[in-house]
Image 1: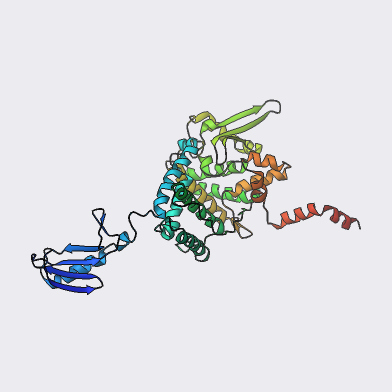
Image 2: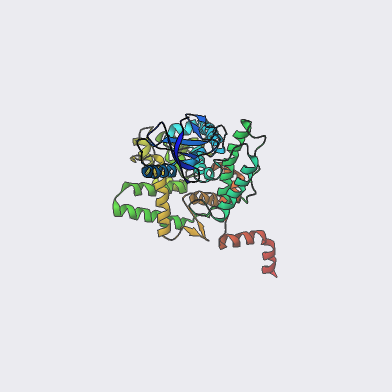
Length: 420
């Protein structure tokens, strides 16, 4: 090595120096024990660079400080041979996405623009989990445990990284994502077992139903918008909302992706009754689901449905056929339109709870129970479980329901009081 003729320390490990066999100044500073050059770790961890063509010490100082300030030290914080939580996460979700696609082949064939739940989970991971756990060595169980508890504490007390409050149910979703990654770590022999999640109070979040007079205010407001703008979207929205009220389907992609071929008009000649049957190849919970629409919907809007069955090609979308945007973009616009109009006519909130588009499904189940249909059948035709029907869809908090339940439970006591 050539003899050093000049050396000056600029603070910390940052140094400028000159060797006798070179007219140009050089610089050096310590990076980390994991600093690599051309893929190989430098044993001394030092960054060394010629400042050619600089020959003046003053200019060398300025350039050395600039390079030092802009250097990416974080890149070399970890041993490149160490596997991090994020490394395992990338592999885990590459498999998870394929798993969701394999389970949803029929859905994805019809919904080429629709992302799977794995994509949504990955977005959550990138936004909230990776910043906290991403750089931790996957074999460092203790650090992972502390980081997971710290993440939950942060979500509870300060919300997400944007400062928005996070509910316990959402925290559970984050923990489920972490478990997917930890299970991959176990499968790859980085961990012996997964790490137990911190305790979370997960509660069902029932949505209050709408009443018919309330949804009429929303559909009337939708038609008013159509008359004002003459935009066909709002005319179609009104019919679509009526369809959701009359059916047992889930609002959203499941319904917006229906094709004309999936609608079939049946006739009961004995009772001279028309029945609109809808076939869904794949739903959130099952395959080959079928449901029929309320008779009063056909009475009021049947002519528009018959025209579509006669005029549309079998592969045409039954709803919003002329819409040029993706189905997922369309779904978001419909959802926001419903919420906007519900707020404008002052029916969106009930007992402090929001009532989005999915609350129409709650209304449908409550109406059937009021008509005397048993809960098992109500759950079956709505493609859900009896538990969900009882705990979520039929959950009521209004005074009228409380009075009705009270009179039913204490019927004999009330009768005795009246007769005394």
